[in-house]
Amino acid sequence: MPDPIFLPVSPPDAIPASRHPSLGRGSAPNGRTSLPDAAPDPAPAQPETAVGLTSVLAEQVEAHISAVRDVTALLPDVEAAADLLIETFTRGGTLYTLGNGGSAADAQHLTGELVGHYKRDRRPLPAVTLTTDATVMTCIANDYSYEDVFARQIRALARPGDVVAAFTTSGNSPNVVSALETAQTNGAVTVLFGGGDGGAAARFADRLLLAPSSETPRIQEIHTLMLHMISEKVDAWAAA
Image (cartoon, rainbow, N blue to C red; front, side):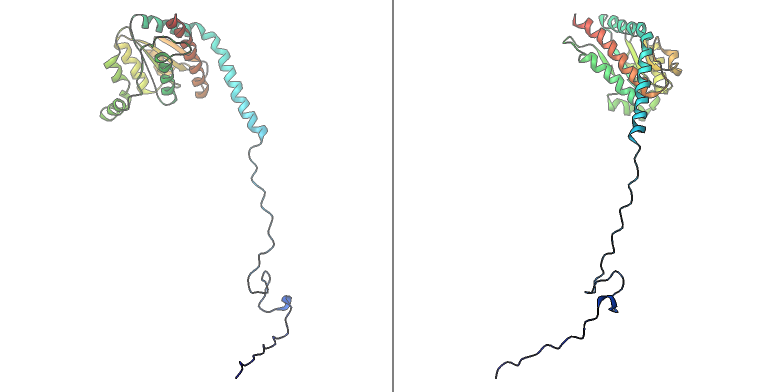
């Protein structure tokens, strides 16, 4: 017997999509929801205008230039500090440097210029930064106090004929003040790289190198300039 033939049943008259009961606004004839017309993207938040940003940066440049211009009056003090280091190294003395945060970086910067070199191939010079031994720093801070982290090292190491140079933007860090006081007690000569009036640390500084500013960024920038000027003269002496 041959396979039966099944005839398809005729569908009901098609209902226009616009009148189909199962279709609402935003629906498609296949029963799936269609995407509504995309709304335009919201306008992005406007960043600070280039003109405004340029103005802020320009103010930084102008403040820097103003501070640097005023350093000219300090050249005799900077040169005297360089001469002090030359005399110290001539006698076989050592420079110890210290500071907190960015000032610690400046202290290490000066030491690097002396132990390594600034511009010339010459003999290394004896300089030590008291922030670089993590074991000693954390031991003193833990067993005594953070205020003692420099003073205790100076008591152990600094002797008459040595120089202790502290970098500080405020001049009021207790561990820096204590370090300079201890250095004087030990007979070392003290140099303060500070700003403004030098703060409490100025009382225990034999030589003051005070950046002509009260703003931390400007003070740090001038400290870098000063240590480069000192390095220039000491470098030339050691290479001669």
